Length: 478
Image (cartoon, rainbow, N blue to C red):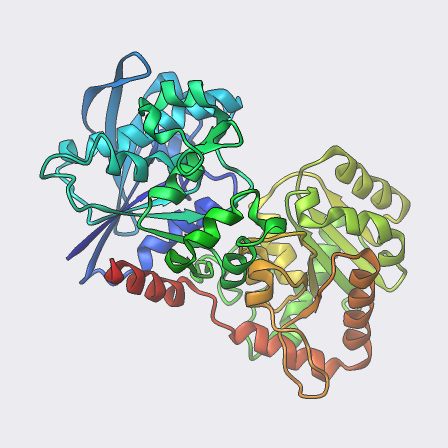
């Protein structure tokens, strides 16, 4: 039995701010339980919902030296879909109103978390063969495994994997501060280790010292070896390219299933979407105050409203997108200028633009189920989950060819009758607009081709089953 420990800062259903939580919460359920014992460890945040905190069982506690004094480490646990989840409890670090708060405080508390994860293992009597670390918040774990935890029989031979969910976030601060928090010697603060342009980075430490590096799509694994996507770590990633693997994320097909999703108005399948899917559209139109017309071309967006997600492109040509034969539904929060853009156009065109500047799990499912197309013109996208959800619901993605979007959406080919969506290559507003207009033309003028594409989209398999087999191969290789 191979033992694997996922270490991460968030995990559904306990705490979520982004796609990282979906991966950590869903993937462990899909491993072969006869061969792999996969467990998860994360902070016990005070801001977790009471329904989850009330399920936790206290195990024990101990004290650990960190940043100049002994710190309390409480250990709790619960079972989630057959997976054991451990929680590190420390109210000094994890009692804030959100998982991430002040940048310097986050550096300190996730340094504590990385050390506490390894310190807890002998106490828990769980010795993993591999610690699978996720993003910068756990970047010190591979370093510690080669440093202060390298001695002794318990830790000897434990391997580590570092998964990059988004290279933009690196856990950087000045060298003296990170040296004080981490307790690492001067040896580690050189340009070939944690130092990075006179500062120091948790993520870089993880990338230098992990036995393997993964990221969340094949294309992103190639892109980050070059300066535009590499966030100043491209040289290191080129140096470690033989240890770098791209494995595309999946989604939980039990949660995202149009056949029995309790959050949508009318369930549907591949066999009946032609009649049933549009009933979700008219219900959403009624709910949002849009003109009720099942034949109107509806585009959806569920996203953080940021530059990375391509909203500067949308802003540039939104007047041309929001024409009379289109309805546009936006759901999300983010930069003020993009929130205001959608509010402005919803006021100007209330019959065809709906701005929902919030986050609602129920409404997101209804958007995936109701819309005809889903717009995702990202500047960069390590994997992306929204396009996988839209495919599952037969809502055809319109994406830019980058990262996981390129790996998961096959562009429509009208001559060979293939494809599961539409794509454009250059980060250009009018190229995006042309692709939207092309999709609209297929929707209105070639309905049989559109429906065949919906059928192909709904049969595409981006469940965790496929990804889990690739991770199992990676674990065996270590």
